Length: 214
Image (tube, rainbow, N blue to C red; front, side):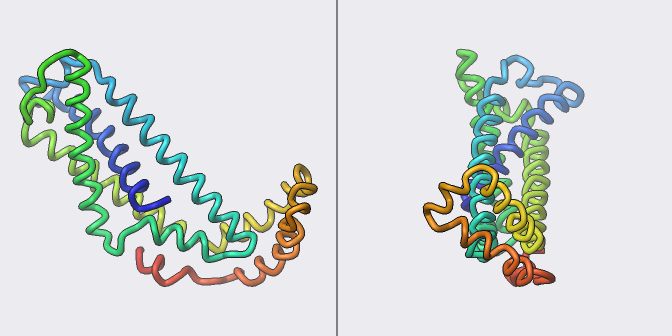
């Protein structure tokens, strides 16, 4: 779960939301809504891209949490630190820029699929140079704020997450794949580490870098 994957995922989600918002708002406030004349195949592409990035990010987070339950409790926090820049303002600026770029690319793709010539910047923004950017910036700021808050909250809940992983992972290995894990010497270490890890993490404060992200 690198900064790039998180930024791309949030920007794509924000661009998708902005594209839909411009399409809906344009029906009411614009005399010429350029989004109405096209099929929006780009929304499916962006949705699949965001889903793929989110899946990769979740898989990385689960892997880091499993490492934390086994023998490296710092892995999950290091993963979260790597996914956020040092500044919230910088993160928001990156998401807004990515949202605007993705929004323009979406409409350019729709235009190309429809077999039409690429319109000017106004057409790519729904027919208005103020409505499109305004909604894109709004969606980008909201998306960045939500993502930052969620990742910072995960950092504060790190101890609880590690305790949950430590409590349930050994049970799953006992039931399904104890033989395989024992063959590699990892199952026994996990079972022994469970009560130790639970005691060590009890009441533990979040790392300073993540606590500062609040």
